Image (cartoon, rainbow over all chains, first blue to last red; front, side, top):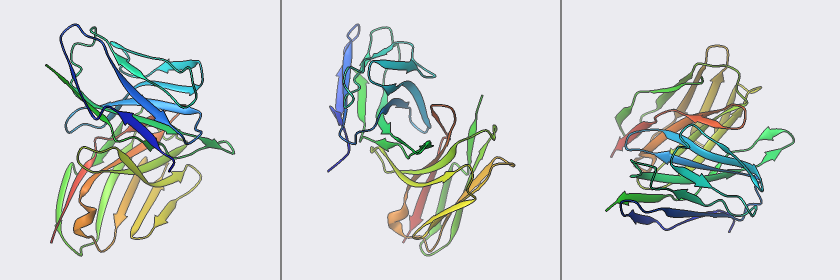
Length: 115
Length: 110
């Protein structure tokens, strides 16, 4: 089945530690996205990538880093510089068909908590 | 800067009712508007996508409309069922990214 796989489902971070969230897609989509969702809030864009080896900062990129070495993979690192990392993190991907944006497909998310 | 607002924040109705969820946005220069469903602790599922040149889209019991000039969209759910209980989010597609509303949490009571 085609889709987006995020792992792990739950993750705990100690003070001063960097952690990496995995996102893999087999939909052959060019664009991939990372969002952060806080309780009762909508989604806020952290980083996005429209093509391999290129990515752009979203609205809340401080304290996060990404890489896009393969089309299928877009890992997100939450660094120790992110002082309030507790949140639900969602990865998405999308394609463009005949110049029209197609719906974004989402993974099931990773819930990050601080120990 | 694009801002998306959803009203109401929460809605509880008895099973079988027809209902409307509202979404408004401040900048009419959009490529499309999307409605998503989110179940607790899960990712988002795309329900309907309306391109900027379209006025509405339908899927089963769901109908979404778009009025770009007034910056509004509505999601109409017919004959609601308990399984429709979830949070519904709208999002507008600008250049390169989606901007989301905060969602409407819908509860359908049996």
